[in-house]
Length: 107
Image 1 (cartoon, rainbow, N blue to C red):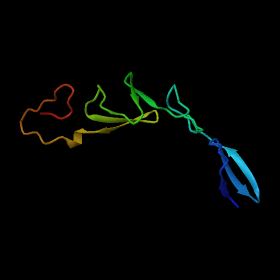
Image 2: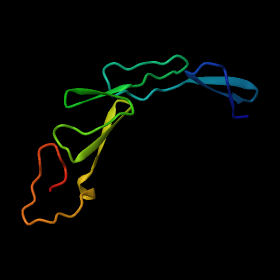
Image 3: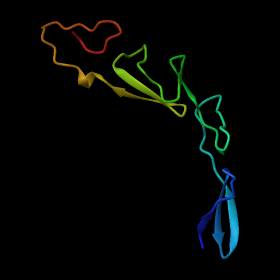
Image 4: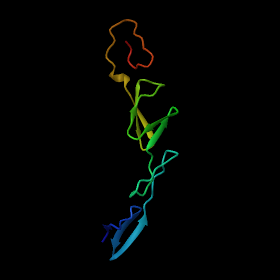
């Protein structure tokens, strides 16, 4: 009782209760992209691309945005998440460091 039962339908969660198989539809999370893709054998559509600063990135792609070279961003399932990289900059050895265009760390 309460055991999962496989029906071959990826869009249904089925369990056995008192000898009766009961199925409920899978609820899909909302997608964050305008063109979600539904893969064969999967119930829920997913995003295979992200848009950031008017540029398109593939799922799993890591990129540095033009607007901030101190960010390292990752496209995952239609969402972009970014981490700061400037805390990894080496110490500067001069009295008037400068940030060059397109570079994160001052030199």
